Length: 203
Image 1 (cartoon, rainbow, N blue to C red):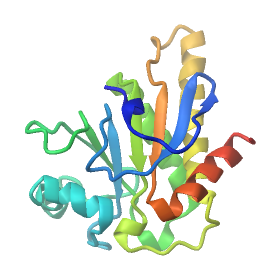
Image 2 (image 1 turned 90 degrees about the vertical axis):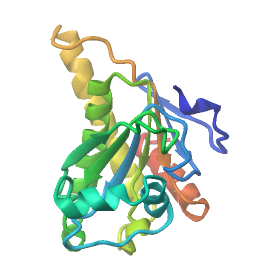
Image 3 (image 1 turned 180 degrees about the horizontal axis):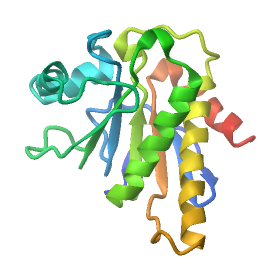
């Protein structure tokens, strides 16, 4: 299920066989093979807003329930793959990635989140993914440069693809079908998100 049928106001950036882009859409509405949503550790941040609020509502509060139960607390780089059995969201799969303590969030962790998302997408054998950083949805105001988050995520994602390609060359991995990566952003942040992608690939 490719997400390219969704309206996109930006030109895809092709890098080493994968198209990167910014998509203005809620993670609760994306038609994609894999939707990634990020959450901080629930013991330190329980805030829901925008896209994360909508995703939780589509699951009738079940996302919050599994966070509170400890199944997925949101520790740094913790992951949980959800298959929406009742089609609660259009995405075929929903991957939760933890960002840990919001007080110590840095760009190194965001790069690893991008790396982790793509590695999990490759394991799942999907052709496309959408990634929602969800920082504003958690009520977190970051001090990073406006383009830093998307640039850093793209660096991690590209590193994951390069790592896998190296394994392929050494006959240690099969072919990768991931060809489309969209970073989700609100309308107000979309231009900065796309500029971050351009900076990552020196365009």
